[in-house]
Structure formats: C-alpha cells, structure tokens
Image 1: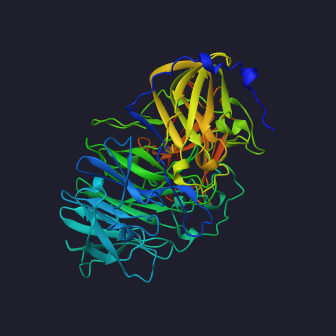
Image 2: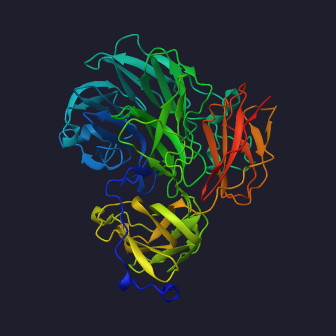
Image 3: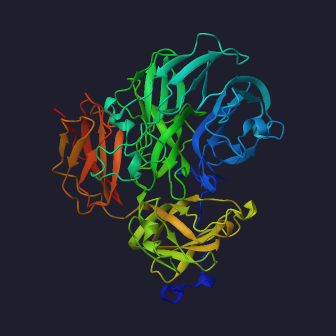
Length: 600
C-alpha cells in the first residue's frame, strides 16, 4: 500500500516559486553521459536492456561523431562534446552498417575528405565486411568504398595517408595489425601480432589482467583471492599518434566488472614493436557511483585537448548493460599518457578552448547526497528509499507504481550549496514491448529550506526524450536543506525508480582531517598484491587510495566510500615495479591530501 508523506512534508505545489536558472548551454558534464542509449540484446541476453559500449569518437569537419555498441542503430553528432543529436544510417547502407538493429565495436576514422566506418561482423560465414564512407555524415548518407577481411573489434588508424587496421578479441587471439592501400586491399606481408594472448593467470606479471572479474563490483573483500575461472579477454585496440610516438590501448580483463580497464603500449612505428607502459593500467575507474573505464577511444578536440570516450559498467538487468563516459587525457614532458578518472563520475568541465586538465576539473563540487536520509511516496521490498543516496549504480529505489504522484525527498541534514544535480533513473518493471514513443522521462525537481515550503528547481514536464542520467548545471548556486523529485512520466509503463539522486556542490563545512598511520605491505609471495591500512578519519565521507610507479605520477586511484573501511587489498600491481602510495580523505566540502609513501 502506498504511504503518502505529502501531509508530513507540508508540500504546497500551487505556491511554488519559479524554477531556478539552469544553464541552457552547460560547461560541464557528469558521467555516465546523459544519452538516450539504445534498447537491445547482446549475444545470449534474454531481454532488451538500455545500453551502449565500446565508444568511438572522431572529429570531422569541426563536429564530433560518436559510435557505440548495441545502441540506436546509428550514431550521434555534437558541436561541443556536451549535447548530442541522434543520426541514423540511410536506407541505402543500413543493412551493410548494422547487425540487425545495431552494430558492435566498429572501426571509425576520418581524414580530410571522409569519415570511414567498418563494423564487427559476427557472421563467421562472411569472410569480408564492407567499408563505408561519408563526406556528410550528419546527413546519414554513406556509400560503400571497399571490403576488408572480417575482424573482431577492428580499429582503423589513418597516419599520413597510410591506413592501418588493428584487431583481436579474446584469450585465443592476439591483437594484430595490417596495412591496406587506399582501395582497402590488404598489403601482403604486413599482418603481424602486436600483443600475444594470455595463456595463464600465473604467467601475467600484471595484476590488472585478472581484476576481480568474477566478483563484479567488490573492491575490498579478501575471500576472492586466487579464485579465477576465466582467462583475461584482451580486446578493443585503439591507436593514436602523438608527435612521433604511437599509443596502442587495449582493454582487459573483461567487460562485466568495474575493474574493466585499458592498458597502453608505446612504439615509434605504427606497426610496432610496442612496449607495455610501466604505469599501466592507463585507464581505470573503480569505486564511487559507477565504475569501469575500458574499451576506449582517445581523440583530440577542436582546441587541441585530448579526451577519452570509454565504457562504464552497470550490469543490473543483464551482464552487458553498460554506459558511456568521457574523461580528460593529458601527456606530460616524459610522453606519459594519463587518463584523469579520479572522481570521474563527478562534474567535469568541457572547456571550449585549450586547457591543461587535472584530476578534478571542477574542484569544489563535491557529492552532497551520499547517505542522506530519503523518504518516498512508496517503495518496493528491497528497493528502499535510502538506496537512492548510496552512490551505487547497482542498487536503486523504486516506487510501487509509475503514477504521477510518486516522489522521493532527500534531507541533507543542513543547508548546502547546490551547483548541479544528476538524476539517474532505474528501469524497474519496464515493458519492452511498449512502443518507443513512450520511452521518455518527465519529472519535476524541488528544493526546500525546511522540508515544508518547496520551490521549483527544474521542470521537465514537457520533456519527450529518454534522459536516464539527466544532468542539470545551475547558472547560480542554490542554498537548500532538502530536495524532492516528483514523477510525471516513467518510460514504457515502468515504475518510478532511481539509481541515485546525486547532488553536487559544497557542504558549507571544512575538508576532513588528513589520513594518518598509513601502512603498505607488498606481498612477497605475489607482488601483484599489496595490503594497505590507515586510521579512520571521523569527518570523512571516504578515501581516495592513490598509487603509481613514481611520486610524480600517481595515476591510479581506488575510491573507498564511507569512512568505516580502513584497509584495501590492491591486486592490479605489476611485478618488479616499486610503487608510491597516497591516501586522501574527502567529504562534502573538499579533499585533504595525505603523505606519499614509497616502497623500499
């Protein structure tokens, strides 16, 4: 039975003040990206899920084009990497571009004249696949311009007029490279293996190859150690040229966990030999609201900034339920590549000018909603209201219905300063047979200083698009003690449900105390492991366990939510590499850096 809290909250909607100003042209994003995503099935899935993965972003004629696995049956275009518009393949090439209603892990690249597209064709009976090209991809019109051999996870590099394909997927196939001419005929004798398969876990000197693939999103359990049934699955090669060096990324250990990451290899030549970087993995996002940062594409924007589009993992309804993220990338004076994923699901600036990225590009916008008390109009068993504030994309609150009067209210416990809000909707009891015109979210968002008198912050009543991770950046910050979201329409006859209602800003307090009594023990029996411990910081909301192969390059970060956990078992280290560690504490008002500890 639905429990109505309306009288308790004293909500008077008729007297609400006008909505606060929301930026119509925002300068920030918040991962995962607020795309509509596609509905589809991947391999053995038994039902449709909202998902996209394996993104490729290319810049062509001052516009960005985004292609993803299991998505909309087309692609997207953007002028600024913030707002995206859907485009569909024209009927003349649709059957050549898609595998049914979508495509998987395509190769996409551009030169001055064309953007090229090669899909991964899973049909083993077809030894070749069409190469498509377009001089006007925003129109959706493409033409066939050649054929190449069927490849798994293909990638195309165009380097000074030369065309190189890279491919390879799974434990039985190396990541390989070959060159084609301008008609896409393979040049004989150019095929070569670049990254050989991994034949056994014990043979890996790099711990990041096995992750915790079988435990999904656990980051601090120890009972899993030594339990591995699957070999790593190197896949998703991607190559860029910067100056006179070539960077080849590939994903490991497998996509269905938040330990999905990218390693990078570096060479002076497009076809190798390539050498693994000592600072691997180059792209890793573990902990926080959502994890995963594998099978990526790195690209340069109009202003010379480097970015990475990557895959994040959800896996709630099917193992291959995934999302897309965008992270800043930098290269230092030593040509070391760094993907800035620390707190990478917090707001990130996307400047429309050249800049130098840092780990936190919006430094003072901290999470305000973590573990805040929530009350709701109704809830399902196991989908209680407080799950909308636990910073975990794999749990969610659900109302009992999708009716318009369902709502969730959040008590911050004090007055905070709000700069941005991310509304992450969950799919609860979605009817996938419903027509796509019903696949949209509509809602209202309110704030209050006392939980009684409410003012409208955001009105999405007239929205007719799917916005599963809707993000609103305020023109001016708003001070409030409460927030409430009220349902207007739920997609495809589902129930009103939220993965999390995430609020960013400042807690009007001071950053936490510095973490003390940090100890590190590298495991002598297996150097891929290290045990860390530290003292509890009472005013912290969590810890950032940072580490790297040099004190000036702490490029790895594991986020530990809550201040109760004071130890962590690292398992992704490289044998023979000495590491440096630093444990930062954070809360709703900032971050306090710890001291760097070096291994002897």
